[in-house]
Amino acid sequence: MDERGITEQQIVRAIDHPDRLQTSVRSEKRFVAKKLISFNGKQHLLLIIYEINAQETTILTVIDTSKIEKYY
Image (cartoon, rainbow, N blue to C red; front, side, top):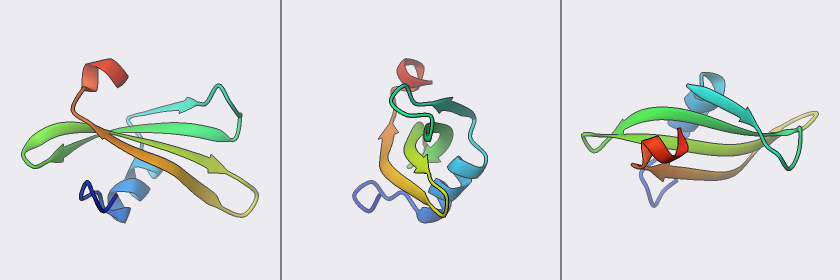
């Protein structure tokens, strides 16, 4: 997140209000939230892979890509 300038607020917003949400093929507790954002004047796609357990949500990875058509 720090390397790409992605804020915690953007991550929370993407998880709470994704443009698209997919269940992972690896686990029914793992999800991929997809959110379009404006980043440095260009449109990017955030992909947040996370798991929901009984008491917490764990962020596994955050991907920022400009290849929207490929992943959206």
